[in-house]
Length: 440
Image (tube, rainbow, N blue to C red; front, side, top):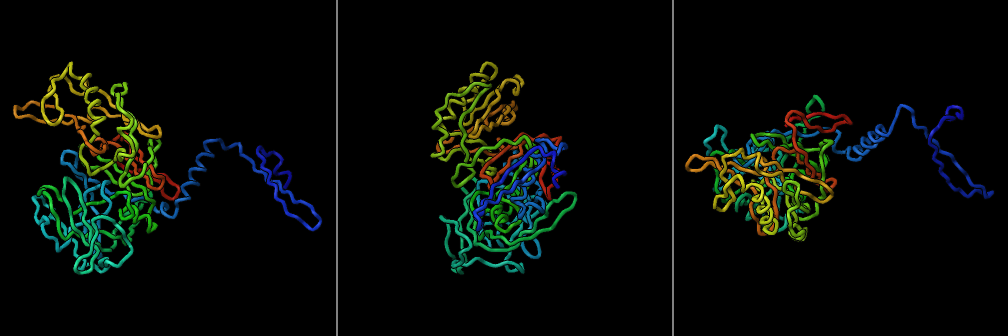
């Protein structure tokens, strides 16, 4: 045995003291060789795979890849899920600013029962599903805080606020959600029981052109779908989305592995709150009081249910001034609630590059196409408007900023990451220690 170990490069000595009857000390020499075939990159790969094993109770069965429909122009992105037994399909808006999943209930008042689209609205009927039931008021499975109550039927209820002042009153039910996991070249059908809302009443403008049956809340609270799937051992509390400006995209539930993703910590709060620290315009720092982005004021929120970017006023005004200093030589400012410009010059060549810097050293670069919106005027001329709106309370980055990127919400490690999406290259997830590709 000694002959086999004579060329060891690394030696680790472990001293184990055991008090024997004769007072002797036992000493063991533990040795380990580093093969010439391995280098530091091999060791790094070994540790990365070993770290994945720490979450193997979730991740060894792949990730769920949900195709995304909708576009930035329509103001929403949505996907399709299946609930109940037998399974029934629902179109739900992807909303990282809401916590729970809810869909229209068959008994819903004020719900949209018709659509101008070929696909008609879907309604969930607990009585027709063999795996469904209501959550009673005495049940301790959930705790959703403000807005919760109890119906005359002893059903646990909750008010969900969403969109531009809209709300839905739901009864909480339990039933199975059906998922198809991608695991290499194969697909694995998985179903697990979750709690979600069945909307009995809704208030707010409905669009006959929006086939939305509910909200797919992917927020930070325990009632959110991603946290329930994690608690059931289906996958880690990690998901990502890639929302294309032109329409469509991908929502991935589970681990995503991309080398170029940069991360910033989630700083706590009721949403995906992060710390935006500074903004640069064409490489020049905008003079903004750092307290404007303070986490005591809520920090900055990543919210796929918001359309535009909303910047607190203390940062918004100096940011707009810095942009105007660059573009006013080539464009005229149009008066209105939203800052718009008229220009005969190629607009993307005159507007500056913006850079948002976050805690942890993560930066997000915004090209003009990432923050400008084309607005046709009554005279047929094309005007360009800033999708950077003033907010009085908290900064929120909506789809305008989040589109055309892979955005990762990692509740396991309490961080949010992103990278610009190359539409010619697929992004990846890990399953059974193997790297697989998904297209946006």
